[in-house]
Image 1 (cartoon, rainbow, N blue to C red):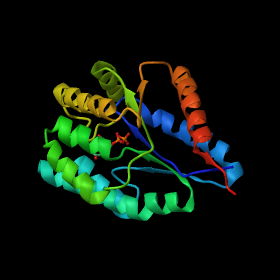
Image 2 (image 1 turned 180 degrees about the horizontal axis):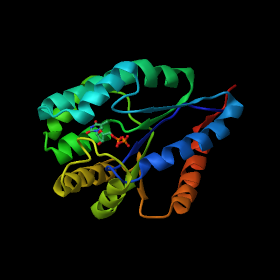
Image 3 (image 1 turned 45 degrees about the horizontal axis):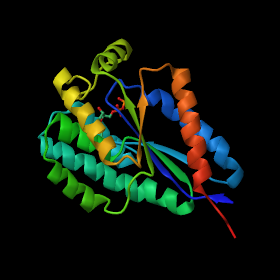
Image 4 (image 1 turned 30 degrees about the vertical axis):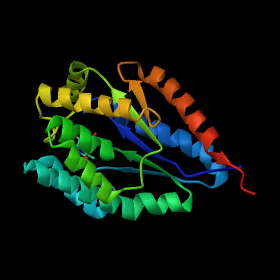
Amino acid sequence: MKPTAKFISFEGIDGAGKSTHISYVAERLQSALSVHQVQVVCSREPGGTPLGETLREVLLQQKMHLETEALLMFAVRREHIAQVIEPALSRGDWVISDRFTDASFAYQGGGRHLSLEKLDALEQWVHPHLQPDLTFLFDVPLEVARARLDATRQLDKFEQEKADFFFDTRNEYLRRAAQFPARFRIIDSTQSIEAIRRELDGLIDTLVATSMVSDE
Ligand code: TYD
């Protein structure tokens, strides 16, 4: 038996705690897949390529027209898919991305009110046939996310947004999770790190088990 390549994305509003769990999932997956000579490729958006990382600096620091922001997010994504995601999946490797297109729907669509039709059109253009196999949505009430952000670091352009921006961003994430229930797993991120890890362990074990196909 051999695992088929999978694409996993991590999502959530700023301060939801997803970053804490990505390295845990990556390590656990890598130890399950090493025996099959499969690598786990960890990446992020905006970013993931040298060009993408350069544009990330611009996107996270500079103010710009909403549509410019959305177009740049998808330009970064186009490069990321071409350089990282598709080559890895074609090799049979697994990909973990810290954010993908759901973030554009949530932030530019929900938070900033760009029309979902425009985002649908960009998605159809940039990746008509590619979707994550599994999306972990780390969900917390806004007050919890804000308290975590304030406690940790210097805030970037998005993190400085007001509560109603994050209210709308979170709602769009939850709307998408309801729209695509087969792909999304909502993680209640108010739980302890240990409780979330136990939940993730079960989800990862199931994913690895269901990815196995006969290699004859
Ligand atoms: P984030 O993933 O939270 O990284 P860090 O944990 O290092 O702060 O930062 C990326 C920011 O970019 C986040 O605020 C969401 C935003 N973003 C969008 O607005 N649209 C997108 O399509 C993507 C991928 C991210």
